[in-house]
Amino acid sequence: MLGSTGPTVAEILTSHQSGSGSPSKTAARVADDIAARGDDGTWITPVPRDELLAAARELEARPGARMLPLYGVPFGVKDSIDVAGYPTTLACPDYAYVAEVTAPAVQRLLDAGALFVGKTNLDQFATGLNGTRTPNTIPRSVFDDNLICGGSSSGSARAVALGQVPFCVATDTAGSGRVPAALNGILGWKPSRGLISTVGLVPACKSLDCMTLMATTVEDLDLVADVIVALDENDPWSRSRGPHHAGTAIRVGLPAVDELDFFGDDAMRTAHVAAREHLQGKGFAPVATTIEPFLAAGELLYQGPWVAERLVEFADFLAAKPQSILPVIRDILNSGKRFDAVDVFRAQQRLQELRARVGRTWVDFDVLIVPTIGTTFTVDEVLADPIATNTTLGHYTHFGNLLDLTAIAVPAGTTSDGRPVSLMVIGPALSDDVVLASAARLIDEPRAPLFAHRLHVVPQEDRR
Image 1: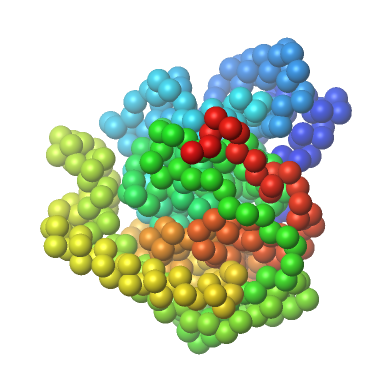
Image 2 (image 1 turned 30 degrees about the horizontal axis):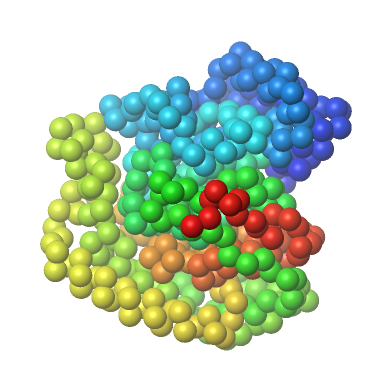
């Protein structure tokens, strides 16, 4: 794993609760780090230094605050999610508005004592997997300034990988959290849809949208999930978390390497094969399988009518201010107009067939492991061919929400020429704890199977 230059959630909590550190000292460090780097494409709206320090002092003065589960832990929020008093821009200045209400998921973090640091950069309207589709400064991978950062949650991944914050709240509709996590050597967890409320998120495709978390350790993901995962009666997709994993052997489905596509990237193929060989002795029981039905579902995302769902949110703005939208995003939005109701039903029927096929595979194994990305691109390569390169980046991620899966991008070293390698662990809906346990094993991180947060108890008022 790429070593973060900043402390983890767990380390910050230990420091703050012991008194060896404080929210004010942490806030000052974060503000100074952001200022020192300047506009590098990570943040769109960072909280001003004086405001961040004031929030930290207010937290310190609050009775009993030191016992809050995220006391003084700084975090970022993707700029498609509302935080009251701050602009939500979606990387489109003419679309921007100042939010009046904080998204419930973010509010839960604030109530738990976390410190909001600012809004992070993204591909405009959360449309894209590469991070170059922004009128703001284009962020770059922390591995190489020539490499793309990945998107659409580009700034979120970069902020965590740089160690500026230990975690970020982002989104993942088609890979928007997992791809930038892979390109920056961190963990990007796409929970089962509905575990984290999407109220207060400007939709990309509302039926597929999913909040995601980025961090550098599974322990940090567990700590944040314990706070942010909750039922929300205002979110029609909301549902309770699934069972905990008991720590037993995990059956892992492995497609034949020849079935995987690395798009001519031999170094990435070699690195992936080596990473798979390291599964031995980590509590995994390999099972041969095929990835064909998963990929077939992924092809429906942009070849099918789901792209038209973006017009539910953006059609009026597209009609009123088309020149305010980046040309590549404008073309994608306009492409949704070609579909009719027959196309929708035809695609839904095909997707249901594939869901049934995929559903039957989980009898044979608990999780599937594939590459998160099959290759990488430079910024120049993406700008020269934005559609084809973006499709390639989503090869292994597009099907996730269409098939109602949970998944996590897990760093797995580098290629021989120094580019990031990432494995993706995939499981059926509500198998999130097995997926997180798998990730911990992959990075050799101890994870006890019976933590309280994994025996998730739903408060009486939240039960339905």
